[in-house]
Length: 166
Image (spheres, rainbow, N blue to C red):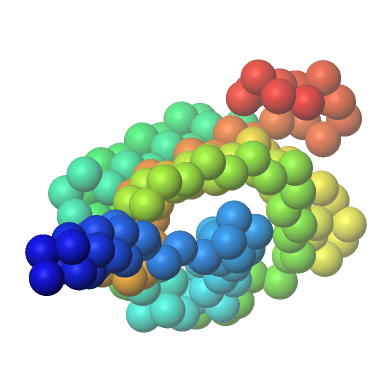
């Protein structure tokens, strides 16, 4: 009797410890989809959709470096919370196109870090390029962005390596 109880206990122990996780490529594709979806929602000026990609806590961080200067803000109220009025005042969608490439993705069960190159092309054909990183946390079953960094550089400068990668 004890032998069977022991075997059942061991089987239950191992079955409880097995965490169902998506294969690596599925998680990476999910993270890429979030990164692209957040950008598309921003371009559409769809505040509710765009805000759904973000965590709304006080530790949310956004950093932008461009020709226009340096901007760093902390907290959802200063980052995303004030964009609703900006979208209402400037409802025209962004008509440029973008392409993300050269993804570098690290993740665990509750934290993910996605780095990528982003190339924007204006309707007139002008290119803007940036190195970007997004940090996400898992909230219940959804990934939420907690940090976004974009560093723009000249498209002609092929030697830029802001993240220590080629």
